[in-house]
Image 1: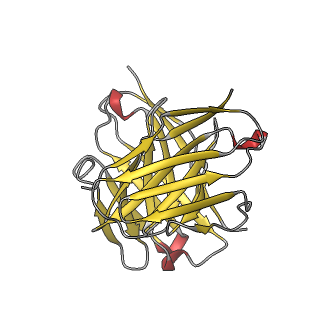
Image 2: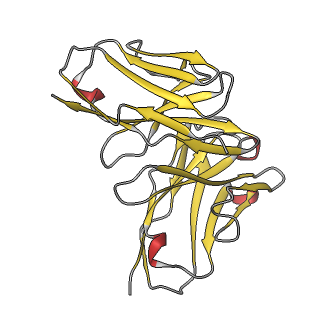
Length: 107
Length: 116
């Protein structure tokens, strides 16, 4: 089973700042990596798929990069609604795993 | 509107059985995989399993194999997650999701509480 590790666990930033979140896989997942955002009391929503493609309706301030084992989600300028928990996810051999999440909170 | 509509919250006792549902609408239900994701209180996301309603091909996470059963009734565009004997540790929010590589559509979740 491929294990995903996310860092940092918590990121404390102010609105307008740039957020850089990391996801590392225990073995290569090629570009088959997705990112999700979850706000309190809500279901997660898909932000990025195939490492760098924005899902429908996702603002351009969200971008994804990476391949193989190292991936990054960047929020170029944090809006108040972006403070949430972010998860990465992969699928390999019909086994899906999520990372433990990074919480982006207000500094 | 494309959506997954889940059944309501449940409160059960240990040892009881339960079946929760997820109804797809606004798209071709038989053409997309439907999965289930668990989120225990205050914790992260765990993939449980997935089913293709078109032919009922089903895959399970090793962590949940034998613990739950996933099924679907394509005639009513509904997927199910069921337990034969609940435990307190099954207390969680359960989300149904659409997709076979990543999950582009999520239900709002069904909260299952198991308590004596």
